Length: 500
Image 1: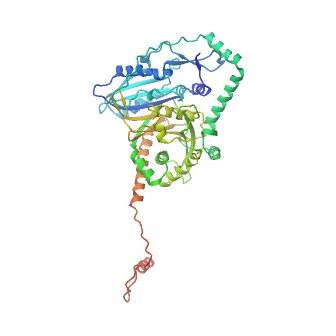
Image 2: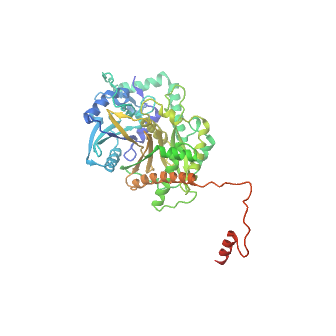
Image 3: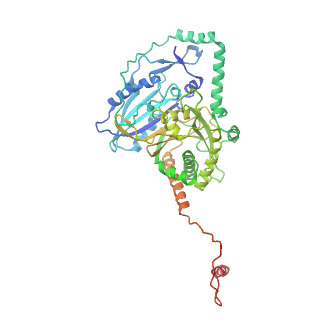
């Protein structure tokens, strides 16, 4: 019997339109292996690994009359070469050209009549490198039945895993009559289950939309955050169909140094950097920024899964007011740490080590789950999404090619002109900025502001270490008696000041 989509998954299909395509993307840059890497090799790799993610050979079939949720069916005409595509930059291709290409790729909606994913091999990148760009629809990835294909194509060493020959044969698609009979049969056999399913679906959507209950921490704190009006911001405007993509990369050790000096977590440091970057970006636009100015971010965080669910498959959406009006970078970090501390009291948050320990390359799947968690929230609830997923600190490879960097591409929701995703990997932290092309022409400025913000925090940390310490003695020092007519230093300065 074909598997029926959940109400949450169906909602992403309904939300998908030309201005807000509901797909999450990844941009990975690799060093060319000694024996080379080309399109045919990528196709062979996907053919050898796609059996690990069978959903990637299935498509959505709607029930006539929408009597029930659609179902997943095997695509009898599945053609991997339709989904795996080839592109090239004019040599020597720059990263700026790659970013422009990514923006164009992410602007286009997926073909709803086929399996909802695409992957591009981008050749000609300077420095003997190539890139793999992928995009997958939200409805595909739930962390339980399906992971992102980026989760399975990388290896922990240069030698690719050898998998058994895939003898996949597509199941026969149900006819329209069978789809209707299946939907009616579900209602006839168990109307109570259908009602319960509807109730659970509403509950799931409500839980995602409000952030209350077991998945979010501090019911009172969350309620207070949602109750406060979302700060007005140029981040929120009508978005068009085209996108811009920008990136920033920094050292994970720099973030650890800041954390050691000022406390908190790496995620707190990341959010403080984002707050500082948004402050710089707002000032560069001449926007009014006061001491009380904030930007509300939706921050998905992995939490402990319920019994029986795969580790890390449960993601909660937190709302955090970033203090962009605070000029002191250390105080910004302290305020973010306090805000996030209210969410940690439940004890359900997963630490970075637990996330990294997940099987395979978890970041692509966890970014998708995080973005899914935020889509159902009302666009007036927050200003932008910031997803941060820690990745492995050991090198990864695709067909022997070393992965140098990996940038997430988080889609935009209605009325939100920018989203920020980041992943740590092999000593680096990689930010991907996805923005509306028309209203966010200065996406590269925001990327530079991210780099400026981390430098600002690093400088503040060094200033703290350089600050001299004052020694307090138990007895005052003996002073030499003053000669007649001689003034003490303090008296001389006072006298001079009075004369001035």
